[in-house]
Image (cartoon, rainbow, N blue to C red):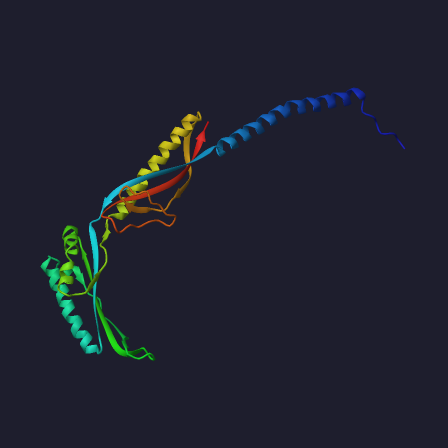
Length: 256
């Protein structure tokens, strides 16, 4: 069998040297590319999250006031007659104070059978129950004339002095401009977040980049100058002057 020809030693050495040189050249280039890629990724991950907040003042332009009268008698007819007198007195009171009929809503009567406990004068049984009926009428006054409604609510004792037992709730102050007010507060809060982020980025020797993420907090509707906050939001109806509070957290990229 014929022997395989052997490659000359010089040619082998030249091949090995060529491979070594190629590796020596390629390694720094590859390392440089990888380093650049790492730097690019690091730059992309340089972010700051900043929370901005703002308050936008509003004033109620609508108010609601609720009143209730009731009567309890031994028979339904007697209870209805007694209630009718009280309802007429409340209607007259509201009319005298300039509350128009269009601003007054009266839901259906509430009627329930109940009982009166009457002492027997004995040890046992000490009381006995007599059937009775209770009927009630509620009034809801809704108006934009808030000053007049406040004045009327402040004189409700006139009914009490006439012997009309009436129960009343506090005024509810509402605003029909809440949608616009929320946008105003959000715009201010976003601008506040950007100003804070620009200050921080400048202090770090960088420039503020694009927005990466936005988290909107819960709106708070609070009395003017109040510091109340809630995770579930506050919707104040007891104050005429209010503020819409908006909080937003914005994540920005930072270029350095």
